[in-house]
Length: 212
Image (cartoon, rainbow, N blue to C red):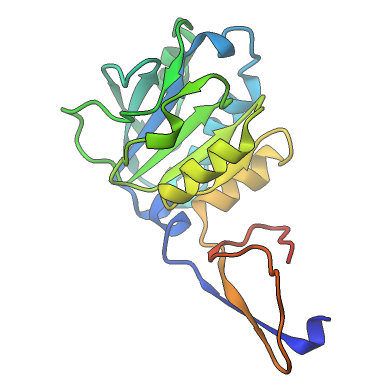
């Protein structure tokens, strides 16, 4: 089949390459009750690995930690230099988990606009998912313990980002995906005849494994 199809792809200038160029990154941390019993070890290890990527570790990055419950709460701000995330991770470990997750507002009103957002969530019990607010920056979702992947996928696409499932992807690979510039799938065109029911149906980032 492949020899009769032309698959169009291009180097992505957005959204993944925006991570490497971002001077400010917002960490949107789902602190709702559904995540109280979750082992956050893989998420925290991902953060360590993410900021150790050469495109980030070679400079200082402003990082805003925003707890998400029923609304976006006041942010704590950090400077991550040379990939050191000890203070950031310490603040995450001290968060209390309660209430439901509502994604109508992703960022506090007074927060400076970030270059990119990383949303850590399980997608459970999400209120208002059908009218999620735009963050005015690419939103990449780091999923762990996910039960509603469809909602998270729609949210990521609306925010020009991608879903990284830490239960299906190695931490190192996930960090490299987001700190690099992956190929972007543009579409399929038959070399002869016609083709129907092509999935995916829209353009999007092509990860390490990409199905057509």
